[in-house]
Image (cartoon, rainbow, N blue to C red; front, side, top):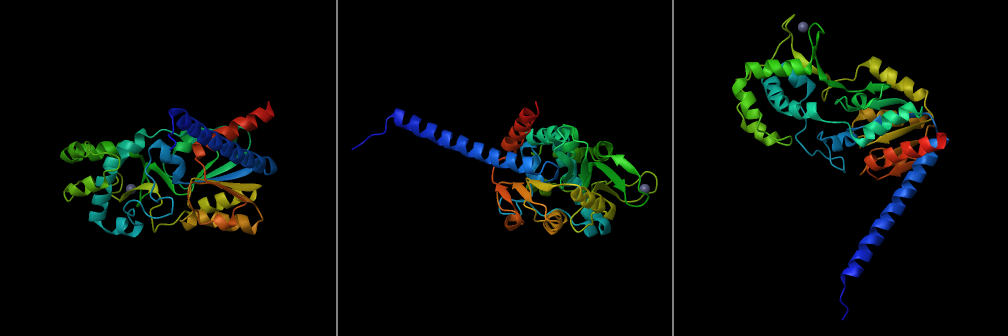
Length: 301
Ligand SMILES: [Zn+2]
């Protein structure tokens, strides 16, 4: 009867690591060759790129809801209680969003923009982390949650200002909310938010809403046109960290296909465009993108 010694275990672990490293090399090589063939990229990013920044993703690797579906635009606009519930959860969540830091992938895409590879970056995320990492050619398809806009007169407020208002007007709630963890959706629901004082516009008394597209809301036509124009100028599209379940992102794949522009996706899990892709890399973007930026920089020097 054989007995596996510690040497055997170490050898197995080593072989596993070695084969994983070889697979990573192969994925990186495929990605590098793709970018060298198509040097002007439109990048489309989704929640997966912000996962390692601590921003919660809404869907799992099969594209299914992981958390409660977010609030619908029409309900937010129509119902005071929906706004109370939204701001109660958002008062908690903002503390974590505010502290989120760009990931290695955000920084790598900023570097690739510097190198002239990333022509434009269209993001479905509303966290502003691309800009914080240094990307400047960003189109925020779904808006930004660090801004709040009056739905009556259009006045814009920093989200942080609204946080201060909310906490001042709801000190007891703010104290309770302070103890809740980033994934504490259920804990928030246990709090009584029926007395929560929401903020209205200082100028006109209108409804204040984060300057982001809610579910059931529309992406502004001018933003779609800007992103479509960016696609026209690109040789190919690189999709990062998105299952493309939402049509506002998926339509860019349809358009790219119509224009004969190849697509590559770096996404751990299924995407809605899997059968349209020239290359699919089920790899962490935090591994591949910094490596790609380094390899391409090496070619230039
Ligand atoms: Zn207003």
